[in-house]
Image (cartoon, rainbow, N blue to C red; front, side):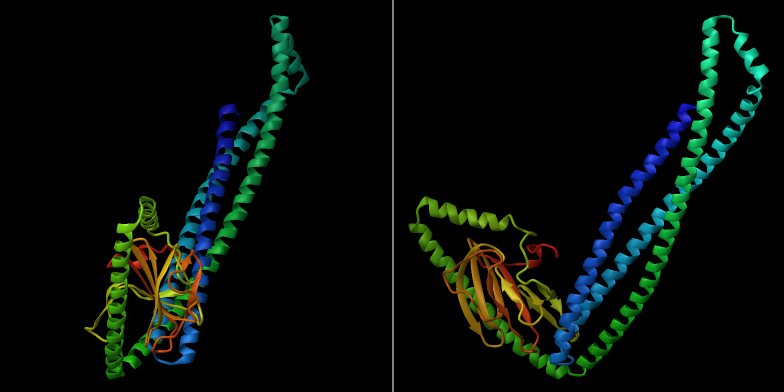
Length: 401
């Protein structure tokens, strides 16, 4: 057994352990991702249950069901990732097992040869002849040391065989555990796919039911459009007034005040993709921009913000330091609060129990009010971000949950 051979086996062993540790970390990340998916599912399930209990067959219920399906698909995707990862682990462990089995056979073969040579050398006459045939005393000492080292090498070889066999046994147990875990995940995947199929059946049934109420949906849509038009006009006027007032103040302000306003705007701009959500839980039920109506074909809805469907009485929080510019009320939407952040504005619509007043300075996470129900009886917040008069997509500013 050469030192190089021993070193190669040692390196293989160490590399196997290192790979294992690296994989555990990645596996942990995948498991956390799955856990987050399960938490989101529980959150949406709660909203779906509340929505369904208040009023059956609503667009809010459909939105919650659609989100529930998205989260279910995300869960199935995370399970597939875990299975793929385990497949990779099993493949790597198979390679390690094959390498260890090969090494054990080679080590045993070498050990048998060493034992055979040792048996021949153990003959006292042979040993003495070998020692006393030395041409000098130094050579005699070297031969004696060689025989001692040869004996030590046999012991080391036997210990190495034991260690490699132990590692081989451990790897076999590990791969058996991984296969059992994979089978469990496969069963879990089958169950979750059945759940997904059931959810899609409910979705199709709800869409068909809502489609039968086309006249009512169109009438409700027209009413909602009129209310949103009033709301948007009100927000536009408030922002315009605030900008004019700010311009007048800026003209008379000193350099320090101007610098402070510029710094606040700059700080807000730097927080793209970093702003906290205005509610602690919920999901986006209607995105920014032009969206197809979820039931009525050919109908497009325009949204200058995002609608966030939440549980009942969810707290609404300020997302960035700023000053309350206005608190207003619009029938059908509840209260609206505009918060100014330099040249940026955040708008929170669909509130009850408003806890702030105009001119008040707000800090991040400070409560503004609680979410109220919309016309359908669904708790929903309409959240908007403006830069001066320009509406921005809030999803581009809020951090990922």
